[in-house]
Amino acid sequence: MSVIRVRGLVKRFNGLAAVDGVDLDVEERECFGLLGPNGAGKTSLIRVITAVSPATAGSAWVDGKDVAARPRETKALIGVVPQLDNLDPDLSVIQNLVTFARYFDIGRKEALARAEENLGLVQLLEKRNARVDTLSGGMKRRLLIARALMNQPKVLVLDEPTVGLDPQAKHLVWQKLRSLKEAGVTQLLCTQNMDEAAHLCDRIAIMHRGRVIAGGTPAALVAEHGGRRVIEARPRTEGREALAAELRGRGLEFQEVEDTFYIFQTDDTGLEEGFLGQMERFSYHSPTLEDVFLRLTGRSLGE
Amino acid sequence: MRFSRRSYRVWQRNRDVFRQVLWTELPGAFAEPLLVLLAMGIGLGSFVGTVNGGRYIEFIAPGIIASYAMFSPTFECTWASYVRMTHQKTFDAIIATPLNVDDVVAGEIFWGATRAVITAVVILVVVSAFGLIHSLWALLIPVLAVLEGLMFASIAMFYTSLVTSIYTFNYYFTLVVTPMFFFGEVFFPLSSFPETVQRLSWVIPLTWVTKLTRALANGEWYSGLWVALVMMVGVTAVFFWLALRGMRRRLIK
Image (cartoon, rainbow over all chains, first blue to last red):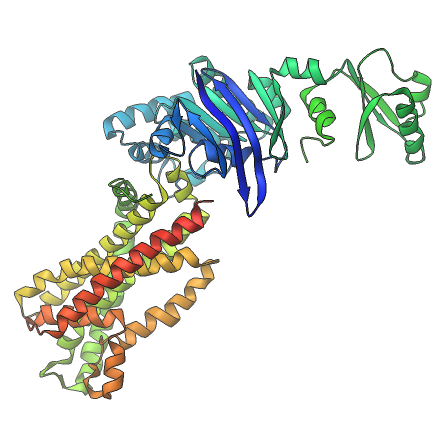
């Protein structure tokens, strides 16, 4: 049985559809990624799944419970790591966790035990009595993860868990999320970072303009939509038209992002080195999720 | 959705935070009402003579209790709640747990009412020590402060559900709170004013509370006070409902 099941979900704001008919199944113990740029509808979708925002149409179930009909029970099963830090600045690190546990009716003794355990897990034990505003960005994000674990959730929902972190802090968060997955915690992860998706996710759904436009394992997505090789070419300004004409003539699929052409090679049809030599710059790379996204939407993820 | 017993969790959170700042905040919070009581009661009182047959300071003491028990929940459910809601995102964090928006708002209002009771009790103890209270009925003043706190917390929270910026609260204080403080029978009885003004004063919620607090402090009850009590209950019920509805509209998107 899927831990999260979404069918025909629509979320409109003043008539504008942020989520425009999404079906989704997240299986037990997997890390499922929602990949897409800002405004793709990821956050709106998870706000409905986590029972804080009502759907315009369609339904979502968490662990078999209808989210709209039983919001309190649903929320008791979920741990949320929000994109924006909403730790309680009036409380210390340990108080943040114990107070949060109390919202779930977890007794003080049990809450303290879990708080110690979770602080150990995210390597913040020595900060237990610190004020929240003295923590670094990476520490705050780890504390948010520790807080989301206080109710021992069946599903952890993470919205851009590493956005704005330096590489070191990012890798530490990734490592924690991987160890949680090994411990059996199902994860739904929103991200616009394809590295993050490739690092952590078993399966991915690519979202664009409120819809899921492709889904599968990272490898399957790349195999299905990435082609064989990607040529990245930056022509001189006066050479743009010629390059585009050449590519159309050869039936090569491509996307233009700013001044760079991403050319998707699906078979032996390519471009001669001599022709590419006229470019200001060119290179080859193996297709990645980023290329899949670019090819399907014509936009890069960072946008 | 409706609020539930879970609103107590929000109340507990605010209580825990209050406990931490208790000894830094409390002296400041009570210096002002005592200053007003002494400055007006003794300073101005020496010119005023007697009011309704008693000393001026005895007249204003219950008014000071009532008005500062209005300020506490008002501050709590305007600036403090607003900061928790918008700047600290505390409400967002809480509604991701089994609590809903109604629980959070009700918990905030209950905490505001608690602040009113704390204020009323502390000032009551001090003015009793000055010998300004003459009736055992004054023991009911903290109970009245519960209702007063709920009323002013609800009105404030309703206003908070509508504001677009923290500066908008200035209007609430200059146009609503301060006029009540001056025309709510705290410092002078309205009996010397024309009949029309006296009638108008009955639309000011603080007037009901000062009349009731004064009656309890002196042990002099009269039938008009039932009207004041009923008005308080009615306004509390209406604004409590409006505050929850306003916050639901604001926060559930």
